[in-house]
Length: 497
Image (cartoon, rainbow, N blue to C red; front, top):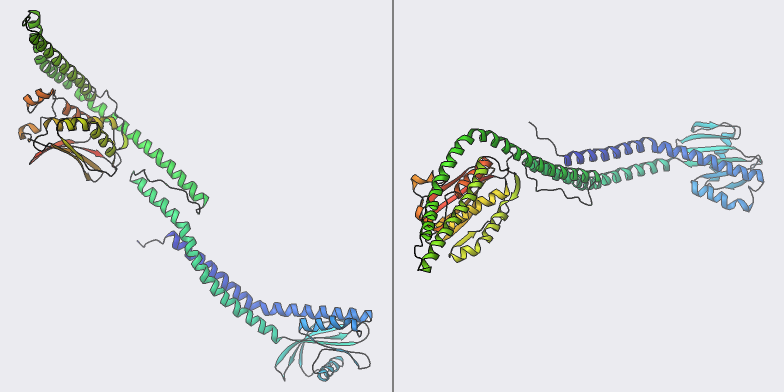
């Protein structure tokens, strides 16, 4: 396909053609009709001068000094040669350099003897207006001759060569000015077309990013842009906000629908598994509580306050562990049964992780653990913000309990097409290969002694798995030479399918 011209180029070409066409049409009209227009005006000027002189003759001031200045003005301003002769052949007024020749020409016209070629333009009882060609001088003249009110004869002549010369000069001037104006207009049009097309291209780029679900970019109105373009930009900003809200609602509705389908298939097996696991996990703390309570009942160590305090501490500690386990079981139960609504929103994951790291900084300092989170650039993901915070908190808590050696925890991103992987790495022992696939199971503990030491219930990673399943996104774990990496993946710029 041929590459289409840009709006700026089309606008520039159109305006240049309009300017160039205007100049060409103007030059053509000037060349074709300017001389005729001058000739027409010269006729009017001769007739006007004749009427002014005829009025002076009817008032009887033609030969007086009162008419000297008006007569000189008529001759000078109109470039007209005039000679006025009375009935006796005497000269009343004359502006001709060669009066003798003028008198001869006037006599010839009066008696109808004219050796020169004459073309009569207008003829009345008082005057005759004609175009005269002087073959000897090869010149054209506009001539008016006639009889004034007092009976005097008048002969008026003006050269037409000046009209042709003026028209030619005007045409040349118009042509050069037209070319200069066209070049200037081209330069102006280039800047104007760019100023018009630039905001339109900006709107096009905004719509392109919106099609990729990037709703952060907004149109900002400018003082030198058209009001209609600013209105379009504002409407696109409103559309962007509504699209983001609608997609958020659609993602939440889509996840809810998928959860409803899965819930029906899993509800029976989950109930059985839940009862079995709870009974197994509660058996040990209940047995301890019962044993130490019976010891207190039978007054074991009655004479030793230290022993009684130890028995009571064990009972309180086991009760607290049972309470934490029950709370986690309730949370896990809500997730697995789909009773907890997932609210899909777009948020800054970098900001969320920084908050979790700051909240656990004091505890990490007490355990001599360094937490490294060097991601500074904002990264936006689609998920339930509060549940993602619980996932990161569980990962970080788990890493702090198992951190050994250098005791370093590092949080970092891995970017893929439409997906952001968040990893929490801690130095320490690797997870045995046979246990990797089972660490997400409820109540499963790789190192039971260590888990028991810090009060773990084996439910934290199960909660993580349940949350990620509610997002329909993966999570996993990888062994490294000097530690273990837990990770989750969240959608960051692709629409839901």
